[in-house]
Length: 368
Image (cartoon, rainbow, N blue to C red; front, side, top):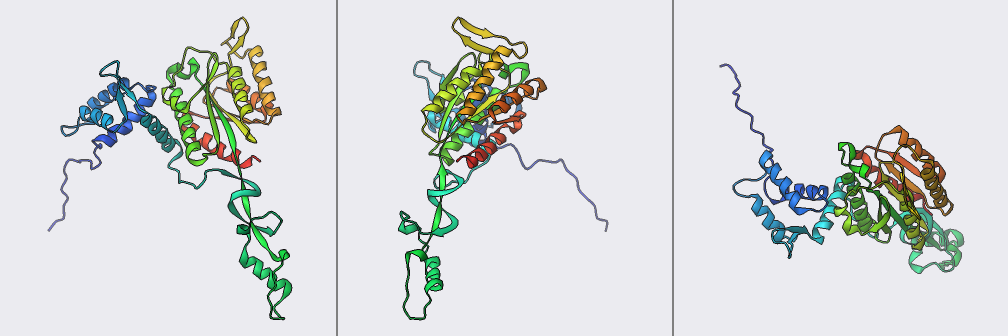
């Protein structure tokens, strides 16, 4: 009897998921892109539904909107009926979503403070042992090692056990550092030029970093500022709503504000992260704004480099994340980084989050 095969039309087992969870994941991405505009995000979601069949007869877009309201993700505007806005619950959800997308899921830690290479007064024991010193807590004494020392130092010939202060050993505690970070985000018009959306990845990085600090380093300080023609501070909860404006790039104003904020922080470790895609093109002067978008204007560049040097003198490293591969602009960033003795990364949008995370951990490890 011949062995044969029967063929039929292939039906994929992994059909697109339908229901609240699958739509919610898309909604969180869209509401980030639309800077918190729920109506626009839902319109996009409707278009995607038409094209890809995200809903069915059992669960439609109306059901999804009702569930968003019931679960506390959106509220109806009291002044404008039918107009929705996201809630604080959604704002936090967007930050968590960005954290998982960029950094992956993080295991919970007990305190969140990062270790330094130094030992001292801290709240987590290291593997290092040393002799007991006046002022050490009784809890830090390692009894097994101390008794062994007593036996070696005094012997047991007399039948009496003797333990002296010189026999005591304690386990070192790892010193924990506290860091103040200012995250600068470029919101100049170039962040959406040439058909590239660079502001959405920058926002995701900022939100992920904010959530990372909250979860893993709760004793740290994170301030967020944006800079265009001017610079101003924003709250972490405002990040999903961040939009690009018709601005030039006043890097000087951003750095001045960042350093002012860090001066007020009483932590020993301070740093600036700057996410940008363009060269500095603007200064604020008594008579108005000095602007030049054509090439690298030495007046603007020199003022920017002076601030980089000033930050270096007060031991504030600046890490620049340049989200463009333009060699002309890289040359400026190299000069800026050399003056500050900081760090610079030239990255496509895909790898931006990973670099922020990795450098954040490295920098914190090295701070004293």
